[in-house]
Image (cartoon, rainbow, N blue to C red; front, side):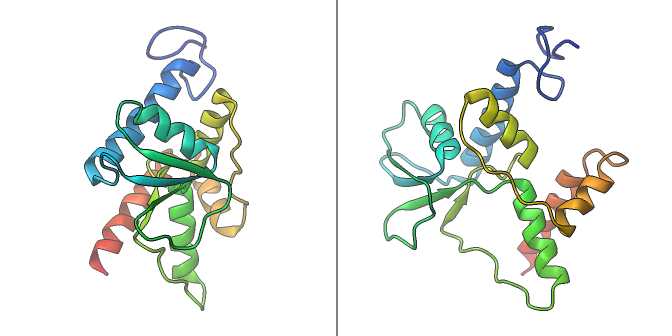
Length: 171
């Protein structure tokens, strides 16, 4: 099968590796630009090497102080913490809070959920292509719901994520 953009050999979701990585970086770049999370001379802690690699490639010309850590640090003043939180994490977290008897509060607003515009599968593919480490979400009843629905409703994860965003605006 050929890439739908450039007709090279497709390897990831109907795209070649180059077009796929460009698409992922473009989505994340747009998400960061629209939300104005990171500015010139910010101090940033990137949790995991996927977030670190993406920040370095997206902000290659912007002077930033980026530190990579493997485990999310407790709150740090004056530093922005970037976590590898995908669209699937957000959907899972919302469903778990909605259905369980003991809902957890939403995550602190000072965290930047870098991978929010992409799914867990896309994050895994990106990490595999770039030869980075990425730990996927553990499958449970909430994540399996989307796995069951996706063959019939292809963009169910994105549609649900949009609904979650609208719901959070109401709170």
